[in-house]
Image (tube, rainbow over all chains, first blue to last red; front, side):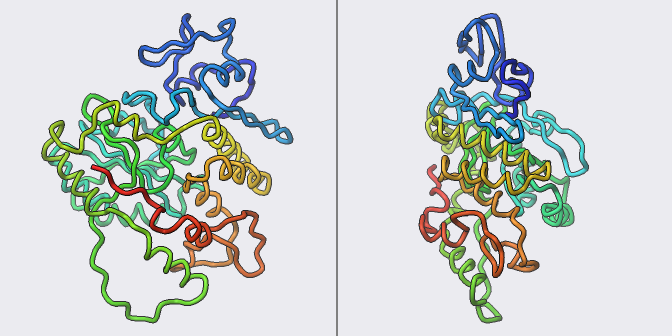
Length: 112
Length: 246
């Protein structure tokens, strides 16, 4: 997750990338809420509380947060979250929820 | 081939959604997409494009093709695993001698890769027929337990991979390499990170099987310590994909 200001993370971006939302109780997902220090949404707080590692490229002024690692696994819940946005091959934005059927096999592939 | 499976299971309530991962754009994917559209007997399955590798980050996919199953309550019932639309077709005897050199080595490697194609395709069919009663539907705890391990190193690898993609897309290809390399070091089991990075190196090879070559070529400056042939040999082609576990 690219970060423009690591002292002020965009809560909407956090939610769209990780499924974690920001509430008065802190960072929340499902039934879990983790208080954030001073209720501040900073890269350091997310790194400390959600295990989102921070990488930087100083020369280009780019910072990125990795996905949460506090669960120790890629999945912390079986609930499909977030509702990812993709493009179709006509360049239209498509949400996963727009194209899913009642049951779905979601498969990744690559031309390489 | 995913289109064919979609046509078989869609009438039973299962939708195949394929997501193409390629930081470099849609150009390389289009021949495959167009082939699927041409072959479609019915409605094409949803074919999406994910240049930012979001789906592999969210679901913990570390190779392609990998898939997850989502039920009608929006819950995952199978974690990410190698996925196949059908058993491998019987191959006719080769009509030409096997290529030599690097392409021969690549093909020899590929021939030794183990993939449980028939087992996975059969599981999808079973889910299509039996739904929640399918023996391949897993309990939530099992789904989570089978998902990719993710600690600090894997999270940091993802962060470096994202920076690398950003730099590559913005014209800083050589600077991107250092971040790609870091992602490979931090998450050595992630073949997607390696193959995506290798695929974006300029290559003198083109066409046919040569387009799959991911490694140094004569006179090229290959900036990675590994390549597909070497790394497969080191890890063992039988370990390239994990085995299907019902």
